[in-house]
Length: 585
Image (cartoon, rainbow, N blue to C red):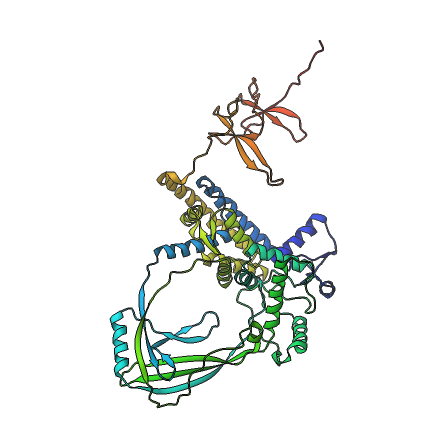
């Protein structure tokens, strides 16, 4: 028996459960990274034994998340909040923090100084800044908080003689983007195709099951050797100038499990047939990224001109970057580029047309989109590739977060849930806790710490927090009476019989059946916690033979009806229900 579940912690645990449930003997553990003939044969050839350390890590994660999810959710229910969890509460906290930053934001004006030259370019006082997208340092105009200071610099420019102090030219190589991992696939599909995380995940799963792409849940950007060779052969036939001497070297981010290789097509000459437009568009996105990732780097020429305005100590600079060799950019339609500076020489006196100030205003922080939230979570090692889609879907389904265009905006219920979790379990929803937990689970998988030791340490602290939280939540409910929603019994059908437990009124509560999706109802007491299936509650005239309390009609698993004590399971008193007989006239 070959067990080919996912190659991560959860997949290993599923394989272990199957072995335990069915008593499998001499089973082999394998992983299919692509559903192709070669992928399946390779998986069987490299099959081995189950990794119990991965199973322990998965079981520890399951217990941890169950304790957090169930126990914290139970305390949130009275406040109208449906759930809490290690990952969803952390993601909600991130969204709420960003929303509060936006609400507290006050725009601030600033000014920049620009000197225009007859030679056909402009320069400004500048500062160095790191470009987050490329990781390169670049020069940007300096911002002045005082308009008078900016105008003084502009006036000094107008009265000075401008001379070229230095000209520096450097060559910059920009490596191609890495192949897709789960987070980058989801974020790129959101940005370029407008797909939701849930939709992209479903499409990618279908592509994988059809054998068209490799496994879709991965945090490793390293491509298998056979994949690199396949793409290099394709490039050699179609665009040989883009084939580098050696495949680009790729390293994974810190904390990556790297259970699977990067997402790529299983063959470069196969295109999806029978797919709807969205499936084909996603496949094209994956195909192009895999192709571009193995291309030669783009080479740029960056020229920086430093200008001395008279005897002043400060300098003006102009910087232009032009493309020398487009490399992989030619496949992205970005092979052209860059307006070059005019021919200049050191010591040259420039002809100043004028110096001006330009007013600007700081922009408020942007709300997260699904794409930017996933990038943020992945960068801070919060969650795993398999959790991103479920995490965001849960926040939307719980009405904790709403969508405003493509942006995610916390709803009032989300603010309440976040406030309560911070109040009682602040340290458990912080980014550091979530990231450190993933590292601890990786430590169990690496046999650095035992599962029982990890859980014992966590449970001891969690019990302390839970006890404190119950007191804090009770005080919060007393201080915020409107935070506890009242039951809406208006318009609900009332039962003729009172509640068999406390004697209060009983009403019919509508709900949706999880299996069929059909609307159903059940009886519930408007005062206590008594509930019953949707049938008028019947009470026996005879008292309970055990405690003397009330007896209500119940039904056994076999379908037989009997009288049972309303205080079950505290009292297990019961009586058989007498059958009615009808006589003939």
